[in-house]
Structure formats: C-alpha cells, structure tokens
Amino acid sequence: MVIPTRGRPDLVLRAVQSALAQTLPPMEVIVVIDGPDQATDLALDNLPDGRVRKIPLMRSGGAAAARNAGVQAAHGEWIAFLDDDDEWSPHKLERQSAFHGQLQTERPHISATAVEWRTDSFVFTYPRRAPRPNESIADYLFVRQQPGEGMLAVPSLMLPRALARAHPMPEFLRTHEEYDWFLDLQAAGCRFSVLLEPLTIVHAPSERKSVSTTATWQASLSWALRRRADLGERAFAAFCLTDVARAARREAGVGTLIAVAAMAFTGRPSPYELARFLVACAFPQHLRWRLTTHRRRR
Image 1 (cartoon, rainbow, N blue to C red):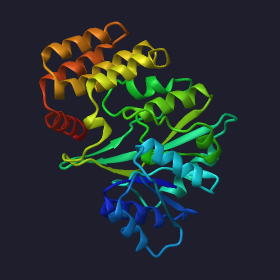
Image 2: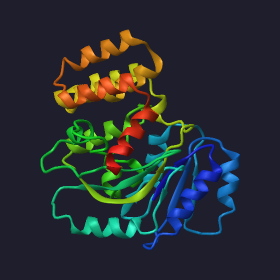
Image 3: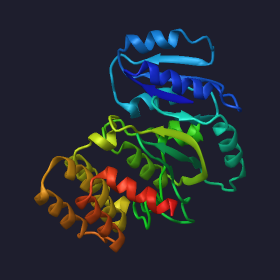
C-alpha cells in the first residue's frame, strides 16, 4: 500500500497504524514523503514495524508524483492507496480483497469501497450506488440524481500493481488529477467496481485544505474543456455546474457564476444539476449539509 505525505507527521502516523492493524495484514506500507520534511522523517523512524518503508523525495512533486513513486517501489501484486489524513477500518483490505476475487471479468479491474466522510458536525456515507453496467466513469461521478450518488475516493482504491505501473497518475496536473487518471484508465479498457461498505474513513474538518477546496475555477474549467470529449456532454455540463461553480462561488462574483452556467449550457445539463447549481448559489455549504442530513434521517 502507498501513502503520500508531507508536513503532517501526527496524521500520517494514524494512517500508518490503521494500515498495520488490518485483519488481512499488508505486505508493506510505503510512505512517500513529498519533499524535505524532517519531522515526518523522524516520526516514521520511530515506528518499530519492519513493514513500513519510507521513501523521501528530494523535492515536492505533488500527490500524483508521490503515489507514482510508491507504486514503482512496491513489491506486492496489489496496490492500495491511503491519504495521510485518512484511515481504514480494520477489515478494509480483507473485505475488499474478497470482493475483488468475486469479480468476473477479463478486463483489468479497479475497486473502491464506500467512504465514511467525517466533517466537524456530520458524518456521511458515500457513494450511494456502484457504477452501472456500461456506464461511463464520467457519468457515474458527475451525472447524479441525488447527493453522493457516485464517488471513487482515492484512499479507498485497490488495483493490480501492473496496472498502476502501466498507467501512472498524471503528474503535470495539480487539480483533478484523479479524474484525469480515471478517464485514462477507462480509455485503456479498465472496469470500476464499488463495494458499498464504508471501510475507508475520510476526515474533512472545516480547516482542512485539499485540492477540492483550493482549486481555482479557472483551473477546473480548463481541465473540463481539455477533457470534454472524454467527459461527454452530460458530465461536462454537470462538472461545470458543481466543481467549477463551487470554486467560482468562493472566488468570484455573480457575473462569473452566470458565465459558468452559460458554459454548462453548451453541454447537456439536467434539471437536477441546474437545481443543485441554484441551491449552491443561494445557500452556504454547511446549511446544505444540514438539509441533506435532515432529509436522510427522515
């Protein structure tokens, strides 16, 4: 398994311990330190378990480059990813490995688990369904009929090492690199499956900084335009009305949001995505989460 990290020694130790505590023990836990980081170096040196392998990089190349370095260094047949601020439930590898063994397909396969998404005040479980037969990965991720319907969280993924080496994550991107990778994997003939059991815990406190909370709307829109043919018109419109609009709402004014909506209409937006866009413009995120939680409880 591979964990990229930088500047979070306490959190990465929690992630490593959750990997070492698996009921199906991993062969190795590769921690890739993304650039000089003495505190993380020392914290990992104090771990007594010989399965933990530390790979320090000379300079920071981002999460994709760190994951790729870990994949290249791995010895096991399978690769599982975990982020340094997240963790696994104890049965994650055991149940996901059994799930992988039941998949009947001649095509290369990537599996994910459901995620328990923990905020300051709420806990959600995503996704609500697995990809449908012959559904494109872009439609699964972005064309939704309800919140949290589709998700492939990188800390929940498992795939063959040979596949991960043949198709590394794109290192030239600093935002949406995982989406770009999924599109490339699908183009290479890969299938995606999801075990709908929350075996991965993603911590999302309000102060957490991640790609999804720091990406600019210009970068998001640029990525969507570059991959528009692979996304398809429905997913392109949905992405504009969600990810691009979310960033635009943080950074810009009403005029930019109107421009983003106009760009979405060059694709095939659904009534549901338009409604989500209007709600996102009208209500702050914490209030939308409260409404979603209340609806699910009912």
